Length: 127
Image (cartoon, rainbow, N blue to C red; front, side, top):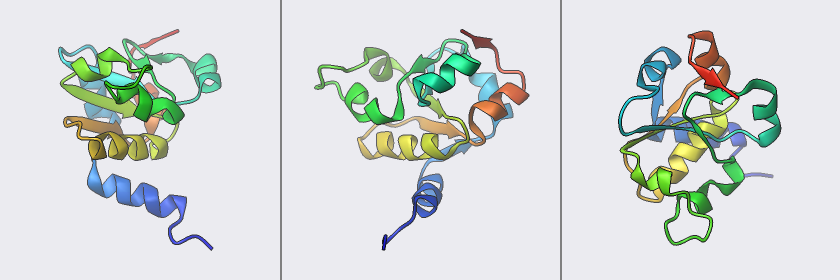
């Protein structure tokens, strides 16, 4: 038996990190110092594209690509003043945002409702 369910972990992450409604998040697309980070799996992107200018960092690689000491570090993650994460529903991005916050990054938020919510409010897409 688990001590905490995945649903509980997501709820705890949502309580600890900033959650942006899609309508508010879409206003940040292309803003200076803001980087959108898509944490979905590659197959999900192939079917839908990404928010314009977003970088793709699958959830399973996030910690390594965020860590400047890792050989797979993505420098754009360190240069951004504000990171806005999204996934397919808002659950993985909440967990990912909490992880980045726990690693010491500030200015981290995630989009509630994920990619479908961003798409529904007219976020510019590419790919």
